[in-house]
Image (cartoon, rainbow, N blue to C red):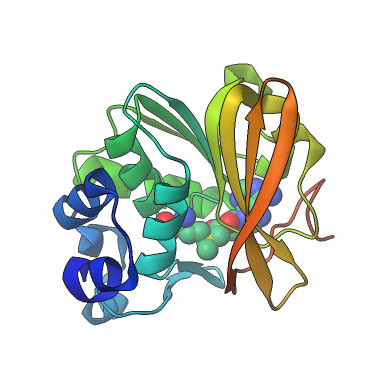
Length: 204
Ligand code: SAM
């Protein structure tokens, strides 16, 4: 996976490559789908949701330019895998998941993988962020949004990076927002397909 799907496609951040080489992705996928663990595609995790394609997780993690001391917010914890990767790259992670059963599963998966130490899973609406632990040096949104939620921009530290797929329900573009010296700048990366971000600042 690391060689064929990540390095060959231009993922260069050595810490991202190492984290994704070390974290046992199979522990975040249910028994019946486990044979797909290292496939180059999203995999079902129940409740109509998916664990993202490995390349997309790597690209999003790389775009945050994490160095190890950061506080990170993930919106859309799903299986907890992406949160585990972020936990290996930063000091602490708060990951929010809207579906309570998935939040519980993500907690169990992180425990089983020995990655729960600096990752806190919260059940709730992450489109509103999680003000209690803000500001965040980096925010990663793993669901497709109709726009960039104002709450997330407010909770982003200065300097800080936010990565989020923005577009319609079926197709989005990955947006990378940087806050620096009080100003926001946005660049777009690749086209992508995420499940919809729901909740107060997501799709109704
Ligand atoms: N990052 C996950 C992983 O590594 O398994 C995959 C995330 S999956 C593509 C998107 C997740 O976002 C789903 O589990 C979905 O329930 C969740 N979601 C959608 N809207 C949300 C919201 N407003 N707040 C929190 N989670 C949300």
